[in-house]
Length: 192
Picture 1 (cartoon, rainbow, N blue to C red):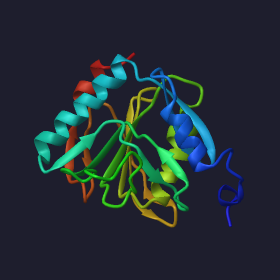
Picture 2: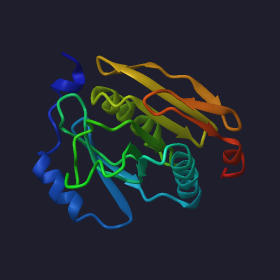
Picture 3: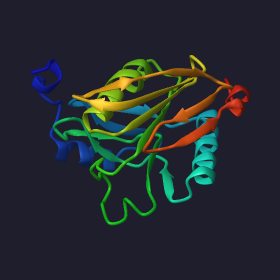
């Protein structure tokens, strides 16, 4: 049993969800690996990157929706609550499922790194592991600090088996079940 699964959570899920409902609009709260996480509100470049990806997904796969900031139940024991920057799923997939639907049926999650002290631990490690444990087929990490896109795929036993990284400007193939090739040239001009 891993250290992650034996750690005691900081609070109950009910307590987290009550706290999250009352949080100010200046932060987003998540519950990852049994810990309360505070995610800053995205800046303009962050939003421009999400919109760039939204347009590419809609043009390539109109039968799919990319949901910004969709809440998900993640992690192996389903005790995690995350709000990825984007969640790719079939059209109307989340209809009637409430604020924290299960990750089943999700094709891809997206995180765009923020410029805060916790982004390395949160986006590059803990959330990646939670998404893999939930069996989400593809996790796309758009790393503004490193100017790369990392495509995590083939989750197995709580880990992604593949994680190639591509520099901004390269064509990036998102593997099945996503099946989209991203033109990342524009990302070179959206840098801070």
